[in-house]
Every structure is written in structure tokens, then in C-alpha cells.
Length: 487
Image (cartoon, rainbow, N blue to C red; front, side):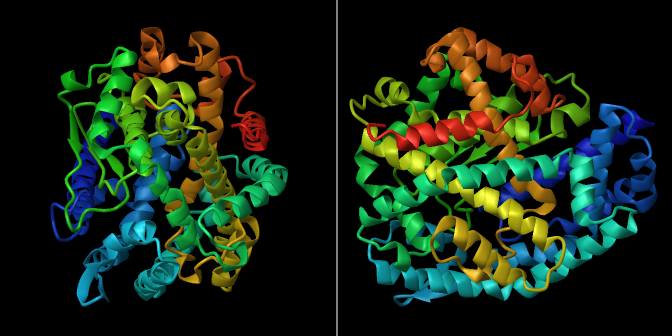
């Protein structure tokens, strides 16, 4: 019975991921998930959910219960999900006599050097974002209501219990991170913005996008060297990308293609898509490396694993593997060996501040989402106030729902950031600062990837000799590297 259910669940997953890939890669005009959910509606009935919620004694069924419950909720709001996605995909704005797709605005904002033009582009983007907020709020309200109907105290309790996030502990650790990094963050914020001739009190998040675009470093990160940098990095660990026939690299710049890079593991491990829409510069490298971390994980999963361990489990694990690759350009040894950069200190200085920015942003998002999922009234004001206080720049109120992923995915990102530092320290202790050049390191990572997501990051960290998942290593690294004037 359970094996047949898992086979059908895996078939559903493959169809759904293929649909998202085609739409987000710009290979079709519209996202169409409603027919897929309707074909597999028997998997997400309330009776199925309640039955599985009562069978969580072992790990395999716990993962299934989490997945079925969250998909049951998504099935209830699938029409709104599809409608919002397609509205944003089809939206355009008028700019200098041309109709510009909404999805293309973010790269344009990043690349726009003129502050007034950048802010005008940002206004146009925010107007489109705001147009979908009534439907976003309706969708979220329905998720909240149905969580209570399933017997959970709240949507927060549902997510925390099913995903094993330990939100109280994570919240305490992230509050400490915000407190411990506040002084150095504000110092670096003023310093970094002054470098592009912007005063902090005039800055908005669109200016931060431009700051982190880092156009002055483009010469260090040439577009034509991006794929060779990835293949050389993997080769150093004994991984031949050319032999990975189950991987497709999609870097074509299509008009409807999402500006956000992503990995689509359609059939694990047999069909994995790595998708990126290059805009130029160091961010392209970071995005490619990040998604390559996901891709190598899914490509190397043991095909004999049960569906819940191949596809489900705690996504903090795959996000940690992605971050491990994402932050290779912060390693001076990698910059020198792979790109031939003799002195990358200025770039590394900015990239470390960028990492701190995102960590503070996601820590703030966690605090905000805990309030958002308690009550929707006044959420827009709380979003602007809370994130503005922790990030020090003007926060667009229109993003108060667009900036929220379902089921506290922000918490899984934060757990991944914590685990990535612990994993990287382990690799450096075992294989040296240039672990990415060691076949033994590649074999060790492959042994982790083969296990899919059967184990949680706490368990993997314990195997490496830690006492579980601990943010102190992350905070120590942030404070020490950002306080070091030499970087």
C-alpha cells in the first residue's frame, strides 16, 4: 500500500517539477498546475492527510505526512497560485517607449547606474507586485484557516511540527545573530553605499541590488569563463561534468525566463536541469555555483533510496550543499586557482558584506513571518518597520507578501547557512583550505549526496563531531571576517 502510494507521489512530483521548469525557464507562456493536481487529487484528500498524520512513528512516514499535508494545502489554493504566477509572468511595464516584461525589471535595476532611473524602474516593478497582493492575502488566509481545520494550533505550529524546524530555538539564535552583527553591519553598510555615492538615509533595497551587482568586478568574472570555472572546480574534486548525462545546463536568455536561477530535479537522479539567466558579473558565478551545488546533490542520490529520502526530507540539507559552492568565490585560494585572480580582496570584502546582508534579511524575515502567520492585519507596516530597522534602508511595502515563501522556507535557508559553515569547517580540517582541489573531498561529498535527504542537518553535523546545529560558528565567522580590515 505505502509503496504504491509513493510511486504515484513520485510520478506527481515529476510532472509538477517539469511544469515549473518549462514555465520558469521561459519555454512556455503560462504555468498550468491545476490539471496536474486534478489528476492526482486522490493523493491529497483530507482523509489521506489525517491517516498519515497518525502514522508518523518512523522517519519515512513522517516525511510523507509533511509532504502530503503541505500539498493538500497547496491543492486548495492551486488556482490562486497559478493565477498569481501567470499574472506576474505576463505583466509588462512601459519604459522609454518599450514594453518591458516584469521579470526583466530586476536585472535592469541591478545594472542601472543612475539612481533616479533605478528608483523609477523600482517603482514600476512595485506597482506590478502590488496588483497581486489582494490575491496573495486571500491565498495566505485560506492556508491559515485550513491549518486550524486539520487540528493544528496554527499555521506556524503545522509548519514547525511537520518540518522539524524548532522555530523557538532558531528564532533565539537569529536574534543573537542580529544583535551580535548589528554594529559591524551598519559600519559596512555606510562604507559600501558611500563607495557608489549613496547616503544610507537615501538608500532603498533597489540600491542594494545595484551595489551587489558589483559591476566594477566584471573583468574578474568574465562571462565566457563561467562554465569552465564550474567544470574545473568539479574536476578538482574528481567529478567530470561532461560525463553527467543526467544533467542539462540551460543558460539561454529567453524573454519569459525567470531572472532567478534555479535547479529543477525532475527525475532524481536521472533528469536534473540547472537553469540560469546570466546578467553579467560575479552574481552570475554565485548563482551558477549555488544551483550546481543543488544539481550535484540530486545527480548523485542513490537511485535505490525510497521516494521520501530521495525527494522529500529537510531542504536545509540541499540548500547547505548549494551554499557550500555558492561561497567558493569568497575563498582566496579558489579565486587564484580557478580564475587566476592575484588580489581579490576588494571583491571578497563586498561579497562578505553581501552574505551578512542576506543573513540579516532572512533572520528579519523569520521574525516577520512569525508575526504575519499570527495575524494578517497590519502586516505591511510590520514588514517595512522590522526589516527596515535591521537592514537600515527603505523597504518596499509592496513586497510584504511577495517576499514570503510557503511553510517557513526562510527557516530552512537559515538552517542551511548554519550547517554550511560547519560542513565547510569539517572539509577544511580534513582536506585543507583548498579542499575543492581534493578528490578525497569530492568522494566525501558524493557519499553525503548519495544519502539524499534521509538525515537532517543536525544529524549530519553530529556525525562530523559537532553537538548538533549551532549558529555560533556562523556568527564567529561573520564578525571576524567583517572586522578584519585586510579581509
